[in-house]
Image (tube, rainbow, N blue to C red; front, top):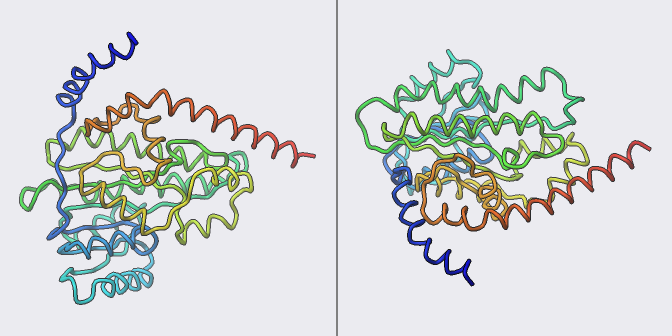
Length: 324
């Protein structure tokens, strides 16, 4: 009883503190803006492009390597909003690891209002079995590739003129919030993106550029279907503990988070639990969400202990079975 009364007495003070301490944020307008999406030729990036066009973006630019796939994606976006939008849909071809090529692509595309880094790759396997070239590919494309895209787009985004706020959205993964057998390299690269985004938030919030980090679960995309062809059996078993989503639903959640100016953007219930567990030094953007983090952290930690126990039992049983 005393504990409950103490909580009730402290609650107004906590709410006031959360209100005072929150990082300033503003909604991000999509209508009339230029949105550039890396990894926009397929999967979540393509669905985001369709949503941006449907919401009245002035221009949507897709960035990827394969020109033929980019042409098909451009036509798909244009067809999805045919007759209902004046959006200019275009594309630029560049490798996210080619800094010079990215600078040329950004110059061709023009200044960007909303940048979405949705490209990525996963090559799951036990770390001791990973090939050196695969480690370079996963870290390079996911981490260095994202930094390269942001670096190339940033000069135009901080330039005076146009409408503010602008936005940079970075796709991380639920694998950054909970490490999974077979994803050591991928999880590490995706965690690095979170800390990159946290630092970027501090550097750019006075320049009126919002930062969002999206944490999708397994999502039905061409990339996942390719990944599943060689994913270790135990990784598949563990991944089934989190519900999968389809690309359009993840894209809708991502766009809602971007438009709201949220830093952490979860895509399903599991993601919200993981966000509470992994909040760490993430910017405090919402009084309600931060209060939920404070109140429910002990509960989510207890849940996580049971989940971890189940994972390790599954891994032990699988390894013992396959070593005999």
